[in-house]
Image (cartoon, rainbow, N blue to C red):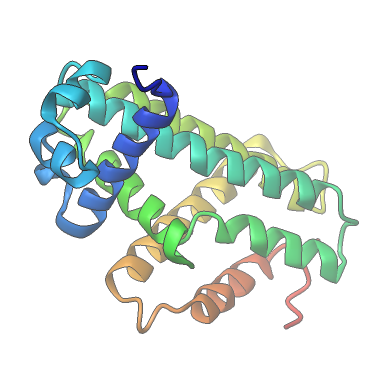
Length: 208
């Protein structure tokens, strides 16, 4: 009896091989042949699911965006469910923002892959659609968080957008520093920086 292969499970195995290659050696090494070798498959088997390197890489980009977005949405719902101005809200917000950062092995791989694709999208049109979706998804979540944290309901839209962009820039910087200098930019240092940033919002106490 021929072996029945779960197509979606096999695609995810291949994508995980892409992630390992990008995290270890960079996006430029993620060819179909290299991915097939990493996944322990024949090139023909990979081509059965992805006809080209671009198709495989775009699918991989979409997968990491979906993974990060799922974690962010889940954490945002937890933050929204806590009371304003409490230690629980502070903890929930820090947990949400921590989902952007490489604070454990899984999130470090995701952050590395996400950053690599976002940077590559600047010169590779094949990644442009997912790069735009990634930006809009993350920006929307950060925007909702800023509205949640704003103590003054009369805040102008311009001010809220400025605060959202300021937080996005902080998160991008922390993510890059944590990837490049993990011995210095530890989870505790990231938490300290985010706590200092969020202390500007009366809704989030700067208590440690």
